[in-house]
Amino acid sequence: MSELKVYNSFTREKEVFKPITPGHVGMYVCGPTVSGESHLGHARPYITFDVIYRYLMYLGYKVRYVRNITDAGHFEEEGRAAEDKISKKAILEKLEPMELVQKYTNLFHWAMAQFNTLAPSIEPTATGHITEQISMIQKIIAAGYAYEVNGSVYFDVKKYAEKYDYGKLSGRIIDDLLETTRTLDGQEEKRDKADFALWKAAPPEHIMRWPSPWGEGFPGWHIECSAMSGKYLGDQFDIHGGGMDLQFPHHESEIAQSTICNHKNPARYWIHNNMITINGKKMGKSYNNVIKLTELFSGDNPALEKAYHPMVIRFFILQTHYHSTLDFSNEALIAAEKGLRRLWEAYEHLNKMTLENGQPAAASAIDEELDKKVKKLVDEFEEFMNDDFNTAKVLANMFELAPIINSLKDKIIPITALTPGTFNLLQEKFGLYIEKILGLKSITEADNDKLKG
Ligand code: ZN
Image 1 (cartoon, rainbow, N blue to C red):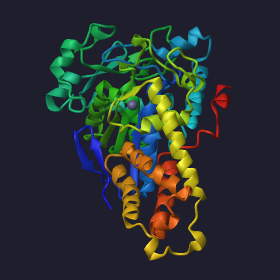
Image 2: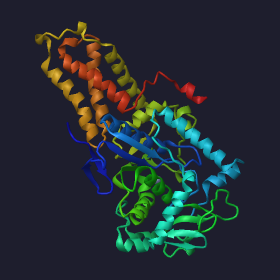
Image 3: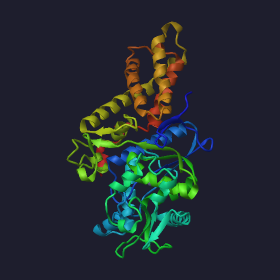
Image 4: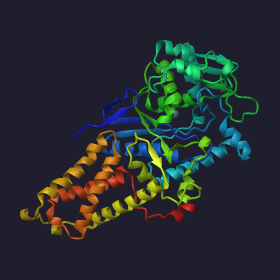
């Protein structure tokens, strides 16, 4: 059996996966900001890490999977002190901030269930871990790598970069950061433009606020993940995951915070999924092409020709290796829908087949070449998954197996052409991979009409 290898974004190398504690895996994945509805871009990381979670469990690991909920206002873009999105939207919709948080958290959970993703082991919230974040900030101040100005606390990136490699994960160079960072809110308070907020003083109109040693305010975004991953997985854990767009500044800053507090990189393996583009364009508010998950399921968006079943989206995402870009288009989704149906039909036929009376096939009836081919295609499932979770290649093999299965069902090829061992292996592994590891389901089980409600 081959060993599991994962591409580590931090070392930029494919490495053999060796957990810190044998038999156990700690995995942290950055969760959603629940100030609005999840969109297509959110589907990819959560489906990718769901398959990774399932596969690690299949390999026999006991996995603690932690995925946070960002329910406090934070800074979204590099160096920019954005308005607290959650409290601003709460005023607009005349809701309590926590009512809004609950609404979008419920909607997120619902969408994840539609995608058949397993719930994480722990789903901590930023607002539930204010004290942990404050104590981490105090540690960074005590170490001399953060400073307070007017009730806000900033991480001293310039000082950190003198001793440590800020920018190693994302490949950013500190000098570039200083040049490209624009003059924005909060900049005049910082010693250096590249510094980021650990704690922000709350202006009077700000609804979400907590007492702190520096006055009333709210935590920065990066500190939340450092505090919660440390609390539930320890100072150093095995896997930290998220989308590639989080490498900078979010994950870079998490590494800096943990390096100062715990003297180590928080994670051994950093795994990042690539982005989804729409008809070749980046997806984002500024491109006006964001497709919400509820719109995908209902078809209610001008960019969509029809509604798409969540399983079609899941299948579409898994047909490309997580490290490659994935371009969304109606044609691609319609092709994915056909592909999933074809594969599922073959799987259902396979499930109904039995070796007649359990009799071993007569040696003369065995088609050795076919038997070898089937066995190889099935054995490769694990080989491909061990090669950095290559779901795309597993599905490609399933597509090669589908016409063979159909011929067995139509008796064009007698079932006795395969050795009982190979037939049993095919039946067992096909089911295991398509349902348990890739987490796919039949798309006839639930149709889109049900999802509209
Ligand atoms: Zn995070």
